[in-house]
Amino acid sequence: MGDNRMSNANKMMLKKNNTEMADLLKLGHHMTRVENKAKKRRRLVRKQREDEGHTFCLPEEILFNILLLIPAQHLHEVVRFVSKQLFDIVIDPVFVRLHRQMSTPGFLIQNRNEKYKLSYIEPDSTRLKVTEIQIPLRAKIMGSFNGLVLLHDLTNPHIYHVMNPATKVNFTLPPLTGLCDINSRDSPAGFGLTSSGCYKVVHVSAKASSKCVRIRVFTLGVDTAWRFIDLRDISIGAKVKNAWMCVPRFIAGFIYWSNCAHFDGIALDVDTEIIYQFSPPEDLVRYGTPIWFLSTGTCLALLRQCQGDIWRLWKLTCVKTGEWTEMAGINIQPVLSRVDKMFYPSKINSVWPVWLINGDFWFYRRVDEEFVVVRYNLVNESFSFFPITHVCPDTLIHPHVHTLLSTKNCKPAIKYSSIDDYNNY
Image (cartoon, rainbow, N blue to C red; front, side):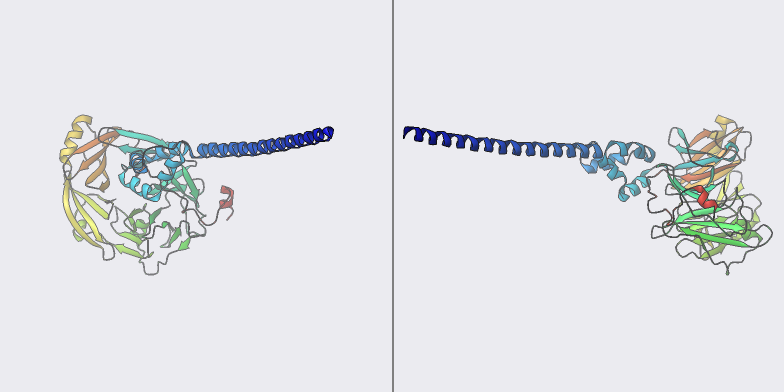
């Protein structure tokens, strides 16, 4: 009897021990699962931190305003490696637009005598910063707008490229085919922006022996091939043809072709793709001194040197009617007299106007074997000048501002894997 009670007690103790052991095993398995989940969660957090980079404690509005003060080329090179938070700010369309508006405009200078080396000149109140821009091909710059640059491939005259020098992003347009004549050095092309935000590239080709002129247009991100523009209503005489062969400029919705020697000009409405012809002001032809067409940022302007260093100024106020309005003249004699005292130029009248924008008149002046870029404010009559060695009579100068504008939505609908694909059209 006593032995039976002892046996039952042992069985109960053994059963209890087995139950406790099972509970301990379950607890151990549970703790292992919890630890594994914690490790996995820590790995995910660590990977997320590695992907996102450093997270700043400053409010995003303050970060936004700080980043607006940094030049575009430095933002793109550094921010994407520092923090996803900062990178998301600088690629925001609102930030890109505000940053472009606050950026200091400069000039792209390309010297044909130096194998088309491309440099960016960014002036400020005290100095001139010159930066060489590396481009992945041998090409001639045709124009710049909103930070995008149009390049003509010098190894294949049928090919054009679009590039953002600040972000180093570039892509190639489909090849031109069936043209009248193509000159690998001077074939004119330009591009502009429609009111809906689409970029268009326009190309002109002509035969030297006839009046044959062909205009083609390509809308970035929309077209898969170049399209012809109807020229049946355009009278193509010698003067108009000479204007077509000039490098165009985009100003406020229109692409302009204008010839300083033959006066007549052509304008293309980028939205409607309608072409207009215009003539110079009626009293302009009385003078024998050279004329200059240049951009004011809002319209086409015409300058003519009249007496000494006094320039008459007209603005094309209506493209469709060809109406010009004469503005107040520009007297640059006080500026030149001070510049000349410092540099003793060998040629007194060698002045080349470049740009007229925001009240600043930009021009460059020959100084012996070098050149001086002058910025003259017409409102307060202040000026600054910068001697440079990058300019010669065979130099291409284009106003430009570095921006973070993305080319993501500008690429052609058809993609080519290599330059050989373009040659096999």
